[in-house]
Image (cartoon, rainbow, N blue to C red):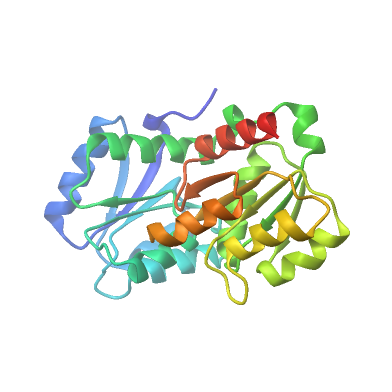
Amino acid sequence: MSVQLPDLTVILVEPSQAQQKLITRYLNEQGVQYVSYFTEGAQALAAIKAEPPDLVISALYLPDMTGTDLVHSIRTDPQLETTVFMLISSETRFRALDPIRQAGAVAILPKPFTVEQLRAALNATLEFIDPHELQLDEQLAEELRVLIVDDSSMARKHIRKVLESMGLVYITEAADGVDAIPILNDHIFDLVITDYNMPEMDGDKLVEHIRTKTLQSSVPILMVTSEENDVRLAAARQSGVSALADKPFEPGYIRSLITRMLIES
């Protein structure tokens, strides 16, 4: 039987009691029943290590650390690194939110958030926990060769986990665009998934290189990025990217993009 919302165990890290009550009410209305509360990151982290929940929901600013510190502590612990993490914050600055995006958050919800935003985030959580509906055709999944290019090791792990949940087996990683070039020269791929902002060679330059200077110029390329600048994103589109997806992303959306790109290629 697949996991349902009433089955989820949630740890909520929020210093405001009023926000705790409000978020919990919204969760309860969606069917989530098991919610534990903490006001400080260290207390929450101890509880997460003692009994890992299905989902951690955190504010960005806590009395003893930030939500960024909390998710990085989770991602660097081998026993916890796949724990689903959601941020709820009124913060809008790119530099404050980007580390959360790069760490593989399932969602970043604003304060206040809508019921629809919460429902989408919870559905994405279920897809991470119980990904059977994400699986591609077995033969296709076993044959598909994918290259992930991202300078964030946490982001690469996050994307790899989503791909593996779809049944993919042949997954290669590159730490940035420069690192990807010799790999692309030596191996043929059916799909490239790349970040935009990377040192030495941005994603649009990598896409341009693949399209003009490799023997696999027609390979589908999915750009998964936290970039918000419309001019820079337009440059990425013009360079020949097949599709764009935001960080954070919903696994089901990535699956549909991959399926569509492979059909069209």
